[in-house]
Image 1 (cartoon, helix red, strand yellow):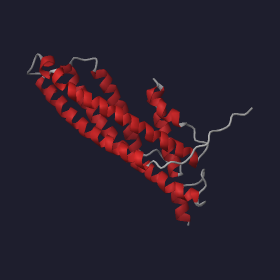
Image 2 (cartoon, one colour):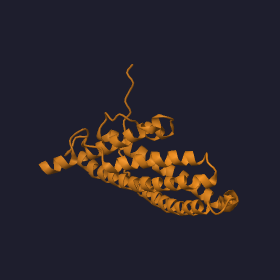
Image 3 (cartoon, rainbow, N blue to C red):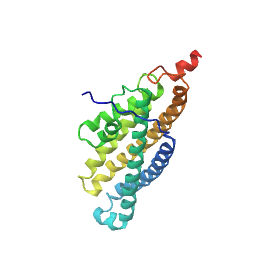
Image 4 (tube, one colour):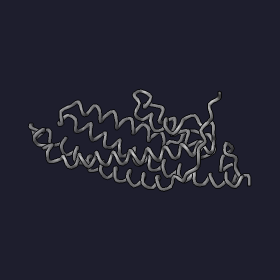
Length: 219
């Protein structure tokens, strides 16, 4: 007996997109503050031999807790938005390669997290636009910044605080670029999907058809 194919229903990604942008913007502010602290601690390391005492982890515990809460909230909303726009992509084009579960879950799977989440996001972009073109530069910057910030963060955890500060600062810069570029991606994909769906509903554009831009130009 052949396995029935799941039927996806369109849902407006606007609200999740807005909350994603808000949380990403707050993360940018938090990373700017962390960048400043890492630069201060890094500069002080050459003058304060007891840098571990100087950083006073107990004094920064509240900041760490806030960062963890923000990361959790951002990850939940980010994941929900990715799930939503991937599901919508299946409405536009049933032959979409990645499922919503894969598009979100790949971020947490070792090794494949280095490339499959990017491919899934790239596919969502192309299907939402209705046209396969060259990968947008902003998407390449986003993925490079995400990988860089993650690698630097993991490596910095293995070092003493005095030595980790410069790497952590670079990681903060990577996180800022990652958030800013992803804000653009969220806004663009959300806008493309909200523009494309009414055209499909009106029968002006097939769900697996041509570019929105091409059809509008032809009309």
